Image (tube, rainbow, N blue to C red; front, side, top):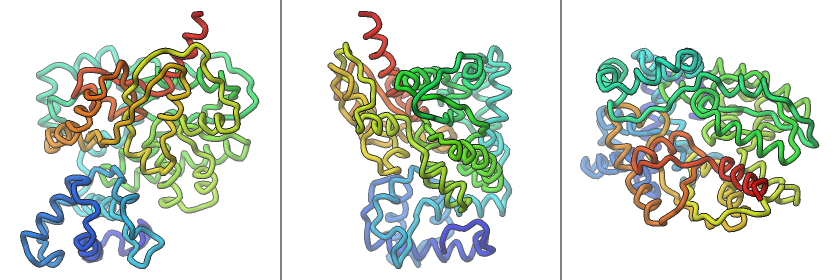
Amino acid sequence: MPFNPKDKAFYHKESLEQEERRVYEICHGCRRCFNLCPSFNVLFDRMDASGKEAEGLVQEDLNEVRDLCYECKLCYNHCPYTPPHRWDIDFPRMLLRAKAVKGKEEGISFADRLFGNVDFLGTWASRFAFLFNPLTHLKLNRIFMEKILGVHRDRNLPLFHHERFSKWFRKRAAKKGIRKVAIFATCFVEYNDPEVGKAMVEVLERNGCELLFPKQRCCGMPYLDGGDIASAMKNIRTNSEALSQAVDAGYDIVIPGPTCSYMLKQEYPIFLPDDKTAKISKHTFDVSEYLMKLQATGELVLPKKGMKVKIAYHLPCHLKAQNIGYKSRDLLKQIPGAEVEVVERCSGHDGTWGMKKEYFNLSMEIGEKLFNELKASEPNMLATDCPLASLQIEKGMGQKPLHPVQILKRAYEEDCAH
């Protein structure tokens, strides 16, 4: 069935299982997604072991395939049978439905509710950052968090900043520009890494953008990680109202995080199909995508001096899922003297999945190929657009990557220094 949470059959376990077996039967005959992620490896292993293909899968097998999906979305673009096709296969949304059915049947866990409500957690953790940051890095507290919240004790966690990005933005002196941009900051920039947002503001203003910060909540993806569609929908409706008004006023929406830009472009029109989300989808851009749009018309301000640097750039899964090409790589290549090598590997962090004690070790195992390829390129600098991939790379390599707009900002600063 098409992905439609309003359909009465959406939450029926029998309907879900029937759809899973239909899809798995087709996947079994195709196998293009072999080795793409742990879900497919387990799926094919279990079907081969039973000798009965999808019919031989027991409930335990179905559960394991569901639990191992971390919604990277790569299989969707890899699949030749996605809508509009007579087989209509949408593997990631089908397993998102499975999480929602589980949440309806068993209830959403406390941990998934807490980590899904990023704005609540971020607001209070930022307000008391002087206490929260050191406490969450104490060994004893990490053991407690593992037992109560299921967060693996060795998972590196982001810091929270007392001055949130939105507060900084509203204090600054606004600049007039020849083009209008509404910033959707992402919750990570808002609470954990405002420096990325500040770099984006500086780069956009240097390129003649007049900036707006509309009312906004978390995009809703963390709620979906836990199967909480009802809570995600509240955020989607709130954001759609404010962002559609910005679009009507002539603003494009520019986002520094690939998961959020993916959500606004591709998930909002699915979850809330109306004129507002259609407009938002059409006018939403990843920040590098937006800047390369300016480059295509000769309007991008290019660094003159540049800097001699070799950058190993990790392409995030949720950027690949947008089918926009290699915009961040192309942007970095605009910096004179910069050599850019792209590494296309999943980091394995993937939302809250890689935080959980059940999957932390597997997430690091998935990330190992990425770490090795980044090291092999022998770079002076690491880059990625994804904040969670950045955490994973920092955990695996001991070096924190920069966002592409931070690197471009540095290149602009080199011009000012000479």
